[in-house]
Figure 1: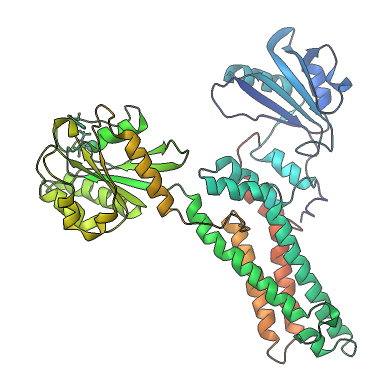
Figure 2: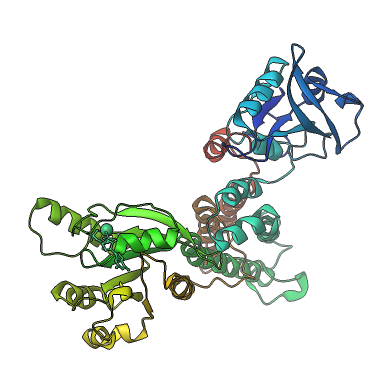
Length: 476
Ligand SMILES: Nc1nc2c(ncn2[C@@H]2O[C@H](COP(=O)(O)OP(=O)(O)OP(=O)(O)O)[C@@H](O)[C@H]2O)c(=O)[nH]1
Ligand SMILES: [Mg+2]
Protein backbone atom coordinates (compact mmCIF):
# COMPACT_ATOMS: atom_id res chain seq x y z
CA UNK A 1 0.00 0.00 0.00
CA UNK A 2 1.13 3.55 -0.68
CA UNK A 3 1.12 6.02 2.16
CA UNK A 4 0.17 8.83 -0.19
CA UNK A 5 2.69 11.57 0.22
CA UNK A 6 5.07 9.52 2.31
CA UNK A 7 5.95 6.66 0.02
CA UNK A 8 8.16 7.06 -3.02
CA UNK A 9 8.40 4.39 -5.67
CA UNK A 10 11.20 4.68 -8.21
CA UNK A 11 14.24 6.69 -7.58
CA UNK A 12 15.63 6.89 -11.09
CA UNK A 13 15.54 9.81 -13.50
CA UNK A 14 12.85 9.96 -16.14
CA UNK A 15 12.57 11.98 -19.34
CA UNK A 16 9.90 12.64 -21.94
CA UNK A 17 8.74 15.09 -24.57
CA UNK A 18 6.09 17.09 -22.69
CA UNK A 19 4.59 19.05 -25.57
CA UNK A 20 1.94 17.73 -27.96
CA UNK A 21 3.06 15.68 -30.98
CA UNK A 22 3.51 17.65 -34.19
CA UNK A 23 5.20 20.84 -35.23
CA UNK A 24 5.13 23.87 -32.92
CA UNK A 25 7.17 26.98 -32.18
CA UNK A 26 8.61 25.37 -29.06
CA UNK A 27 8.84 21.79 -27.83
CA UNK A 28 9.75 20.75 -24.32
CA UNK A 29 11.86 17.84 -23.13
CA UNK A 30 11.54 17.36 -19.38
CA UNK A 31 13.68 15.40 -16.95
CA UNK A 32 12.81 14.57 -13.35
CA UNK A 33 14.76 12.65 -10.73
CA UNK A 34 17.97 12.77 -8.72
CA UNK A 35 20.29 12.68 -11.76
CA UNK A 36 18.42 15.26 -13.86
CA UNK A 37 20.98 18.00 -13.35
CA UNK A 38 23.99 15.68 -13.77
CA UNK A 39 22.47 14.38 -17.04
CA UNK A 40 21.90 17.96 -18.19
CA UNK A 41 25.59 18.66 -17.45
CA UNK A 42 26.48 15.85 -19.88
CA UNK A 43 24.42 17.10 -22.83
CA UNK A 44 24.23 20.88 -22.41
CA UNK A 45 26.86 23.45 -23.35
CA UNK A 46 26.28 27.00 -22.14
CA UNK A 47 28.11 29.71 -20.26
CA UNK A 48 27.41 27.82 -16.99
CA UNK A 49 27.00 24.13 -16.28
CA UNK A 50 23.40 23.31 -15.24
CA UNK A 51 24.75 22.07 -11.88
CA UNK A 52 26.04 25.61 -11.25
CA UNK A 53 22.66 27.21 -12.00
CA UNK A 54 20.40 28.43 -9.24
CA UNK A 55 16.82 27.22 -8.81
CA UNK A 56 14.38 28.36 -11.51
CA UNK A 57 17.08 30.06 -13.61
CA UNK A 58 16.97 29.80 -17.40
CA UNK A 59 20.01 29.67 -19.65
CA UNK A 60 20.55 29.74 -23.39
CA UNK A 61 22.88 27.09 -24.81
CA UNK A 62 23.21 24.03 -27.05
CA UNK A 63 22.39 20.37 -26.67
CA UNK A 64 25.27 18.33 -28.08
CA UNK A 65 25.97 14.67 -28.69
CA UNK A 66 29.34 13.36 -29.88
CA UNK A 67 30.37 16.91 -30.67
CA UNK A 68 27.35 17.53 -32.93
CA UNK A 69 24.88 20.30 -32.02
CA UNK A 70 21.35 18.87 -31.84
CA UNK A 71 19.62 22.19 -31.15
CA UNK A 72 19.93 25.62 -29.61
CA UNK A 73 17.78 25.60 -26.50
CA UNK A 74 16.70 27.37 -23.31
CA UNK A 75 17.38 25.20 -20.26
CA UNK A 76 15.65 25.66 -16.90
CA UNK A 77 16.75 24.08 -13.63
CA UNK A 78 14.17 23.52 -10.89
CA UNK A 79 15.61 22.14 -7.70
CA UNK A 80 13.87 19.72 -5.34
CA UNK A 81 11.43 20.20 -3.71
CA UNK A 82 10.36 23.36 -5.59
CA UNK A 83 9.30 21.65 -8.81
CA UNK A 84 6.17 20.00 -10.24
CA UNK A 85 7.31 16.53 -9.18
CA UNK A 86 9.10 17.61 -6.02
CA UNK A 87 12.34 16.20 -7.49
CA UNK A 88 15.15 17.93 -9.35
CA UNK A 89 13.68 18.85 -12.72
CA UNK A 90 15.37 20.11 -15.88
CA UNK A 91 13.27 21.52 -18.71
CA UNK A 92 14.83 21.91 -22.14
CA UNK A 93 12.86 24.16 -24.49
CA UNK A 94 13.81 23.27 -28.04
CA UNK A 95 12.63 24.30 -31.48
CA UNK A 96 9.29 22.51 -31.83
CA UNK A 97 10.29 20.10 -34.59
CA UNK A 98 9.50 16.44 -33.76
CA UNK A 99 12.87 15.33 -35.23
CA UNK A 100 14.79 17.73 -32.98
CA UNK A 101 12.75 16.73 -29.93
CA UNK A 102 13.40 13.08 -30.64
CA UNK A 103 17.18 13.74 -30.93
CA UNK A 104 17.30 15.72 -27.67
CA UNK A 105 15.26 13.05 -25.88
CA UNK A 106 17.51 10.29 -27.12
CA UNK A 107 20.58 12.32 -26.04
CA UNK A 108 19.33 12.61 -22.45
CA UNK A 109 18.41 8.93 -22.44
CA UNK A 110 21.90 7.98 -23.65
CA UNK A 111 23.22 10.21 -20.88
CA UNK A 112 21.42 8.18 -18.19
CA UNK A 113 17.69 9.02 -18.11
CA UNK A 114 14.87 6.51 -18.58
CA UNK A 115 11.87 7.14 -20.86
CA UNK A 116 8.92 8.12 -18.63
CA UNK A 117 5.70 6.14 -18.72
CA UNK A 118 2.26 7.80 -19.11
CA UNK A 119 1.51 10.13 -16.20
CA UNK A 120 4.76 9.33 -14.44
CA UNK A 121 5.64 12.98 -13.70
CA UNK A 122 2.26 13.55 -12.05
CA UNK A 123 2.46 10.19 -10.25
CA UNK A 124 5.79 11.30 -8.78
CA UNK A 125 4.25 14.65 -7.80
CA UNK A 126 1.57 12.71 -5.89
CA UNK A 127 3.99 10.27 -4.29
CA UNK A 128 6.24 13.10 -3.14
CA UNK A 129 3.37 14.98 -1.55
CA UNK A 130 3.15 17.84 -4.08
CA UNK A 131 -0.55 17.11 -4.62
CA UNK A 132 -3.16 14.68 -3.37
CA UNK A 133 -4.78 12.05 -5.57
CA UNK A 134 -7.83 14.18 -6.32
CA UNK A 135 -5.57 16.97 -7.63
CA UNK A 136 -3.41 14.54 -9.59
CA UNK A 137 -6.44 13.03 -11.32
CA UNK A 138 -7.69 16.50 -12.17
CA UNK A 139 -4.47 17.28 -14.07
CA UNK A 140 -5.55 14.74 -16.69
CA UNK A 141 -9.09 16.11 -16.71
CA UNK A 142 -7.70 19.60 -17.24
CA UNK A 143 -5.63 18.52 -20.23
CA UNK A 144 -8.57 16.85 -21.92
CA UNK A 145 -11.29 19.36 -20.94
CA UNK A 146 -13.42 20.16 -23.99
CA UNK A 147 -15.94 22.54 -22.48
CA UNK A 148 -15.83 25.58 -20.20
CA UNK A 149 -17.50 23.58 -17.41
CA UNK A 150 -15.01 20.73 -17.69
CA UNK A 151 -12.15 23.22 -17.55
CA UNK A 152 -13.66 25.04 -14.54
CA UNK A 153 -14.19 21.84 -12.57
CA UNK A 154 -10.74 20.45 -13.36
CA UNK A 155 -8.97 23.70 -12.57
CA UNK A 156 -10.72 24.12 -9.25
CA UNK A 157 -9.81 20.51 -8.42
CA UNK A 158 -6.16 20.97 -9.45
CA UNK A 159 -5.97 24.09 -7.28
CA UNK A 160 -7.08 22.03 -4.31
CA UNK A 161 -10.57 23.40 -3.61
CA UNK A 162 -12.27 20.02 -3.86
CA UNK A 163 -9.60 18.35 -1.75
CA UNK A 164 -10.03 21.00 0.95
CA UNK A 165 -13.79 20.45 1.03
CA UNK A 166 -13.44 16.67 1.19
CA UNK A 167 -10.69 16.94 3.82
CA UNK A 168 -13.02 19.13 5.91
CA UNK A 169 -15.86 16.60 5.64
CA UNK A 170 -13.40 13.85 6.56
CA UNK A 171 -12.38 15.84 9.67
CA UNK A 172 -16.04 16.13 10.68
CA UNK A 173 -16.46 12.37 10.43
CA UNK A 174 -13.28 11.83 12.42
CA UNK A 175 -14.63 14.12 15.17
CA UNK A 176 -17.94 12.24 15.25
CA UNK A 177 -16.15 8.90 15.32
CA UNK A 178 -13.80 9.95 18.14
CA UNK A 179 -16.83 10.96 20.18
CA UNK A 180 -18.59 7.70 19.42
CA UNK A 181 -15.54 5.60 20.20
CA UNK A 182 -15.14 7.44 23.48
CA UNK A 183 -18.73 6.56 24.34
CA UNK A 184 -17.96 2.90 23.67
CA UNK A 185 -14.74 2.91 25.69
CA UNK A 186 -15.97 5.17 28.49
CA UNK A 187 -19.75 4.85 28.47
CA UNK A 188 -20.16 6.72 31.77
CA UNK A 189 -18.28 9.80 30.57
CA UNK A 190 -20.24 10.52 27.40
CA UNK A 191 -23.96 11.02 27.74
CA UNK A 192 -26.45 9.87 25.11
CA UNK A 193 -27.55 13.48 24.97
CA UNK A 194 -24.11 14.53 23.84
CA UNK A 195 -24.25 12.01 21.02
CA UNK A 196 -27.87 12.37 20.04
CA UNK A 197 -28.23 16.07 19.86
CA UNK A 198 -29.51 18.13 22.73
CA UNK A 199 -26.19 18.64 24.46
CA UNK A 200 -24.60 21.39 22.43
CA UNK A 201 -22.09 22.28 25.13
CA UNK A 202 -19.69 19.80 23.56
CA UNK A 203 -19.57 21.83 20.35
CA UNK A 204 -22.33 19.98 18.49
CA UNK A 205 -23.42 16.36 18.72
CA UNK A 206 -22.17 13.52 16.55
CA UNK A 207 -25.60 13.16 14.96
CA UNK A 208 -25.76 16.81 13.99
CA UNK A 209 -22.24 16.69 12.62
CA UNK A 210 -23.06 13.61 10.57
CA UNK A 211 -26.34 15.06 9.30
CA UNK A 212 -24.49 18.17 8.11
CA UNK A 213 -21.82 16.04 6.44
CA UNK A 214 -24.37 13.85 4.65
CA UNK A 215 -26.20 16.98 3.46
CA UNK A 216 -23.02 18.47 2.05
CA UNK A 217 -22.14 15.21 0.34
CA UNK A 218 -25.63 15.10 -1.18
CA UNK A 219 -25.13 18.57 -2.63
CA UNK A 220 -21.79 17.58 -4.18
CA UNK A 221 -23.24 14.38 -5.61
CA UNK A 222 -26.20 16.11 -7.24
CA UNK A 223 -23.98 18.88 -8.65
CA UNK A 224 -21.89 16.10 -10.24
CA UNK A 225 -24.72 14.91 -12.51
CA UNK A 226 -25.42 18.39 -13.89
CA UNK A 227 -21.73 19.09 -14.21
CA UNK A 228 -21.09 15.85 -16.12
CA UNK A 229 -23.74 16.79 -18.63
CA UNK A 230 -22.23 20.24 -18.99
CA UNK A 231 -18.82 18.67 -19.47
CA UNK A 232 -19.63 16.61 -22.51
CA UNK A 233 -19.47 18.25 -25.86
CA UNK A 234 -23.07 19.01 -26.92
CA UNK A 235 -24.06 17.52 -30.26
CA UNK A 236 -26.30 18.79 -33.03
CA UNK A 237 -27.52 16.60 -35.89
CA UNK A 238 -27.90 18.19 -39.32
CA UNK A 239 -31.06 16.69 -40.79
CA UNK A 240 -33.30 17.25 -43.78
CA UNK A 241 -34.50 15.93 -47.10
CA UNK A 242 -31.89 14.66 -49.59
CA UNK A 243 -29.97 17.28 -51.55
CA UNK A 244 -31.07 20.32 -49.54
CA UNK A 245 -27.40 21.18 -48.82
CA UNK A 246 -26.75 19.60 -45.37
CA UNK A 247 -23.20 18.54 -46.17
CA UNK A 248 -22.42 21.83 -47.92
CA UNK A 249 -23.68 23.60 -44.80
CA UNK A 250 -21.38 21.52 -42.58
CA UNK A 251 -18.41 22.40 -44.81
CA UNK A 252 -19.39 26.08 -44.71
CA UNK A 253 -19.63 26.07 -40.90
CA UNK A 254 -16.25 24.34 -40.59
CA UNK A 255 -14.78 26.57 -43.30
CA UNK A 256 -13.18 23.51 -44.89
CA UNK A 257 -13.99 20.95 -47.54
CA UNK A 258 -14.63 18.22 -45.00
CA UNK A 259 -17.38 16.03 -46.48
CA UNK A 260 -18.42 15.04 -49.99
CA UNK A 261 -21.22 17.05 -51.56
CA UNK A 262 -22.81 16.54 -54.94
CA UNK A 263 -25.86 17.41 -56.97
CA UNK A 264 -27.07 13.80 -56.96
CA UNK A 265 -29.53 13.04 -54.18
CA UNK A 266 -28.39 10.54 -51.55
CA UNK A 267 -24.68 11.47 -51.46
CA UNK A 268 -24.27 11.13 -47.68
CA UNK A 269 -24.98 7.65 -46.31
CA UNK A 270 -23.07 7.45 -43.06
CA UNK A 271 -23.17 9.76 -40.10
CA UNK A 272 -20.11 12.03 -40.10
CA UNK A 273 -19.13 13.91 -36.94
CA UNK A 274 -17.06 17.07 -36.83
CA UNK A 275 -16.31 19.46 -33.96
CA UNK A 276 -17.00 23.13 -34.46
CA UNK A 277 -15.74 26.05 -32.35
CA UNK A 278 -18.28 28.87 -32.48
CA UNK A 279 -17.16 32.48 -32.45
CA UNK A 280 -18.10 32.65 -28.74
CA UNK A 281 -15.50 29.92 -28.08
CA UNK A 282 -18.24 27.40 -27.19
CA UNK A 283 -17.86 24.08 -28.95
CA UNK A 284 -20.40 21.76 -30.48
CA UNK A 285 -20.14 18.40 -32.24
CA UNK A 286 -22.03 18.41 -35.53
CA UNK A 287 -23.30 15.22 -37.15
CA UNK A 288 -23.97 15.29 -40.88
CA UNK A 289 -26.57 12.65 -41.75
CA UNK A 290 -28.14 10.92 -44.72
CA UNK A 291 -31.01 12.84 -46.26
CA UNK A 292 -34.63 11.80 -45.79
CA UNK A 293 -35.95 9.87 -48.77
CA UNK A 294 -38.43 7.09 -49.40
CA UNK A 295 -36.13 4.02 -48.99
CA UNK A 296 -35.48 2.25 -52.27
CA UNK A 297 -32.98 -0.37 -51.15
CA UNK A 298 -31.22 -1.85 -48.16
CA UNK A 299 -28.58 0.89 -48.24
CA UNK A 300 -31.28 3.55 -47.83
CA UNK A 301 -32.70 1.64 -44.87
CA UNK A 302 -29.28 1.40 -43.21
CA UNK A 303 -28.59 5.07 -43.85
CA UNK A 304 -31.92 5.94 -42.25
CA UNK A 305 -31.07 3.92 -39.12
CA UNK A 306 -27.78 5.82 -38.76
CA UNK A 307 -29.56 9.10 -39.25
CA UNK A 308 -32.13 8.27 -36.55
CA UNK A 309 -29.36 7.27 -34.15
CA UNK A 310 -27.72 10.65 -34.68
CA UNK A 311 -31.02 12.41 -34.00
CA UNK A 312 -31.62 10.44 -30.80
CA UNK A 313 -28.21 11.25 -29.39
CA UNK A 314 -28.30 14.92 -30.39
CA UNK A 315 -28.94 17.75 -27.94
CA UNK A 316 -30.60 19.71 -30.69
CA UNK A 317 -31.24 19.59 -34.44
CA UNK A 318 -30.24 21.74 -37.37
CA UNK A 319 -33.20 21.17 -39.73
CA UNK A 320 -32.27 22.09 -43.27
CA UNK A 321 -34.77 22.91 -46.04
CA UNK A 322 -34.37 23.95 -49.64
CA UNK A 323 -35.99 27.39 -49.70
CA UNK A 324 -35.91 27.49 -53.49
CA UNK A 325 -38.15 24.51 -54.18
CA UNK A 326 -41.60 23.62 -52.85
CA UNK A 327 -41.86 21.72 -49.60
CA UNK A 328 -42.28 17.97 -50.01
CA UNK A 329 -43.55 15.09 -47.90
CA UNK A 330 -40.08 14.45 -46.43
CA UNK A 331 -39.87 18.04 -45.16
CA UNK A 332 -43.24 17.67 -43.46
CA UNK A 333 -42.24 14.29 -42.07
CA UNK A 334 -39.08 15.81 -40.59
CA UNK A 335 -41.00 18.51 -38.79
CA UNK A 336 -43.75 16.19 -37.60
CA UNK A 337 -41.39 13.52 -36.28
CA UNK A 338 -38.67 15.62 -34.68
CA UNK A 339 -40.03 19.15 -34.52
CA UNK A 340 -40.87 19.00 -30.82
CA UNK A 341 -37.27 19.21 -29.56
CA UNK A 342 -34.87 22.15 -29.62
CA UNK A 343 -33.95 23.04 -33.20
CA UNK A 344 -32.81 25.74 -35.57
CA UNK A 345 -34.52 25.91 -38.98
CA UNK A 346 -32.16 26.60 -41.87
CA UNK A 347 -33.67 27.81 -45.14
CA UNK A 348 -30.84 27.04 -47.55
CA UNK A 349 -30.29 27.89 -51.24
CA UNK A 350 -31.85 31.33 -50.86
CA UNK A 351 -29.64 32.45 -53.74
CA UNK A 352 -32.08 30.52 -55.93
CA UNK A 353 -35.11 32.27 -54.46
CA UNK A 354 -37.49 31.72 -51.56
CA UNK A 355 -40.60 29.80 -52.56
CA UNK A 356 -42.39 29.48 -49.23
CA UNK A 357 -42.74 31.12 -45.84
CA UNK A 358 -41.29 29.42 -42.71
CA UNK A 359 -44.63 29.90 -40.95
CA UNK A 360 -45.82 26.94 -43.05
CA UNK A 361 -43.38 24.74 -41.13
CA UNK A 362 -44.26 26.19 -37.77
CA UNK A 363 -47.89 25.49 -38.54
CA UNK A 364 -47.06 21.80 -38.87
CA UNK A 365 -45.54 21.57 -35.41
CA UNK A 366 -46.52 24.00 -32.65
CA UNK A 367 -43.25 23.55 -30.80
CA UNK A 368 -41.31 24.95 -33.71
CA UNK A 369 -42.68 28.44 -33.02
CA UNK A 370 -39.75 28.91 -30.64
CA UNK A 371 -37.18 27.75 -33.18
CA UNK A 372 -34.93 30.38 -34.74
CA UNK A 373 -35.03 30.61 -38.55
CA UNK A 374 -31.80 31.31 -40.44
CA UNK A 375 -31.59 31.92 -44.19
CA UNK A 376 -28.40 30.69 -45.82
CA UNK A 377 -26.59 30.11 -49.07
CA UNK A 378 -24.19 27.36 -48.06
CA UNK A 379 -22.13 27.54 -51.25
CA UNK A 380 -21.26 31.21 -50.71
CA UNK A 381 -21.24 31.18 -46.89
CA UNK A 382 -24.08 33.71 -46.66
CA UNK A 383 -25.92 33.49 -43.33
CA UNK A 384 -23.16 31.59 -41.51
CA UNK A 385 -22.68 34.36 -38.93
CA UNK A 386 -26.40 34.28 -38.09
CA UNK A 387 -26.29 30.50 -37.87
CA UNK A 388 -23.25 30.72 -35.56
CA UNK A 389 -25.25 33.04 -33.28
CA UNK A 390 -28.35 30.84 -33.35
CA UNK A 391 -26.28 27.73 -32.52
CA UNK A 392 -24.65 29.58 -29.65
CA UNK A 393 -28.04 30.50 -28.15
CA UNK A 394 -29.26 26.91 -28.48
CA UNK A 395 -26.08 25.63 -26.86
CA UNK A 396 -26.63 27.90 -23.86
CA UNK A 397 -30.24 26.71 -23.64
CA UNK A 398 -29.42 22.99 -23.67
CA UNK A 399 -26.40 23.18 -21.35
CA UNK A 400 -27.49 22.64 -17.75
CA UNK A 401 -26.51 25.35 -15.31
CA UNK A 402 -24.08 24.40 -12.61
CA UNK A 403 -23.85 27.08 -9.90
CA UNK A 404 -20.37 28.56 -10.30
CA UNK A 405 -19.78 28.40 -6.55
CA UNK A 406 -20.71 24.69 -6.38
CA UNK A 407 -17.85 22.40 -5.39
CA UNK A 408 -17.97 19.70 -8.04
CA UNK A 409 -15.87 16.60 -8.45
CA UNK A 410 -14.57 15.70 -11.88
CA UNK A 411 -14.60 11.93 -12.25
CA UNK A 412 -16.95 9.02 -11.77
CA UNK A 413 -14.41 7.48 -9.38
CA UNK A 414 -14.57 10.60 -7.21
CA UNK A 415 -18.35 10.64 -7.28
CA UNK A 416 -18.63 6.93 -6.35
CA UNK A 417 -16.35 7.51 -3.37
CA UNK A 418 -18.49 10.42 -2.18
CA UNK A 419 -21.57 8.21 -2.54
CA UNK A 420 -19.85 5.46 -0.55
CA UNK A 421 -19.04 7.94 2.21
CA UNK A 422 -22.57 9.36 2.19
CA UNK A 423 -24.19 5.90 2.31
CA UNK A 424 -21.97 4.84 5.20
CA UNK A 425 -22.80 8.02 7.13
CA UNK A 426 -26.51 7.46 6.49
CA UNK A 427 -26.14 3.89 7.77
CA UNK A 428 -24.49 5.29 10.91
CA UNK A 429 -27.36 7.73 11.31
CA UNK A 430 -29.89 4.92 10.86
CA UNK A 431 -28.12 3.04 13.64
CA UNK A 432 -28.71 6.04 15.90
CA UNK A 433 -32.43 5.22 15.76
CA UNK A 434 -31.88 1.64 16.89
CA UNK A 435 -30.35 0.12 19.96
CA UNK A 436 -27.16 -0.64 18.01
CA UNK A 437 -25.83 2.90 18.23
CA UNK A 438 -22.90 3.60 18.75
CA UNK A 439 -21.06 0.30 18.07
CA UNK A 440 -22.40 -0.22 14.54
CA UNK A 441 -22.20 3.46 13.75
CA UNK A 442 -18.52 3.48 14.54
CA UNK A 443 -17.79 0.79 11.95
CA UNK A 444 -19.98 2.62 9.40
CA UNK A 445 -17.95 5.73 10.01
CA UNK A 446 -14.73 3.75 9.51
CA UNK A 447 -16.13 2.80 6.09
CA UNK A 448 -16.88 6.47 5.32
CA UNK A 449 -13.34 7.42 6.31
CA UNK A 450 -12.00 4.70 4.01
CA UNK A 451 -13.86 6.31 1.10
CA UNK A 452 -12.53 9.78 1.97
CA UNK A 453 -9.00 8.39 2.23
CA UNK A 454 -9.25 6.76 -1.16
CA UNK A 455 -10.53 10.03 -2.57
CA UNK A 456 -7.54 11.96 -1.29
CA UNK A 457 -5.03 9.18 -1.92
CA UNK A 458 -4.29 8.37 1.71
CA UNK A 459 -3.29 4.70 2.01
CA UNK A 460 -4.29 3.78 -1.54
CA UNK A 461 -3.14 0.61 -3.24
CA UNK A 462 -0.68 0.60 -6.14
CA UNK A 463 -3.41 -0.94 -8.32
CA UNK A 464 -5.56 2.16 -7.89
CA UNK A 465 -2.63 4.40 -8.80
CA UNK A 466 -1.87 2.27 -11.86
CA UNK A 467 -5.50 2.51 -12.91
CA UNK A 468 -5.57 6.29 -12.57
CA UNK A 469 -2.21 7.15 -14.09
CA UNK A 470 -2.49 4.72 -17.01
CA UNK A 471 -4.96 7.18 -18.55
CA UNK A 472 -2.35 9.95 -18.66
CA UNK A 473 -0.26 10.83 -21.66
CA UNK A 474 3.51 10.45 -21.61
CA UNK A 475 5.26 13.64 -20.56
CA UNK A 476 2.68 14.74 -17.97
N1 LIG B 1 -27.39 27.20 -55.33
C1 LIG B 1 -27.09 26.57 -54.21
N2 LIG B 1 -26.70 25.29 -54.24
C2 LIG B 1 -26.41 24.67 -53.07
C3 LIG B 1 -26.48 25.34 -51.85
N3 LIG B 1 -26.14 24.47 -50.88
C4 LIG B 1 -25.84 23.31 -51.48
N4 LIG B 1 -26.00 23.44 -52.81
C5 LIG B 1 -25.80 22.40 -53.81
O1 LIG B 1 -26.79 21.41 -53.61
C6 LIG B 1 -26.28 20.12 -53.96
C7 LIG B 1 -26.49 19.18 -52.80
O2 LIG B 1 -25.67 19.57 -51.73
P1 LIG B 1 -25.28 18.58 -50.56
O3 LIG B 1 -24.58 19.39 -49.57
O4 LIG B 1 -24.58 17.39 -51.12
O5 LIG B 1 -26.71 18.18 -50.07
P2 LIG B 1 -27.11 17.14 -48.91
O6 LIG B 1 -28.32 17.66 -48.26
O7 LIG B 1 -25.94 16.83 -48.07
O8 LIG B 1 -27.49 15.89 -49.80
P3 LIG B 1 -27.55 14.34 -49.39
O9 LIG B 1 -26.28 13.98 -48.73
O10 LIG B 1 -27.70 13.68 -50.70
O11 LIG B 1 -28.75 14.17 -48.52
C8 LIG B 1 -24.83 20.34 -54.31
O12 LIG B 1 -24.71 20.41 -55.69
C9 LIG B 1 -24.50 21.67 -53.69
O13 LIG B 1 -23.47 22.37 -54.36
C10 LIG B 1 -26.90 26.70 -51.83
O14 LIG B 1 -27.02 27.37 -50.81
N5 LIG B 1 -27.19 27.26 -53.06
MG1 LIG C 1 -24.95 15.11 -47.65
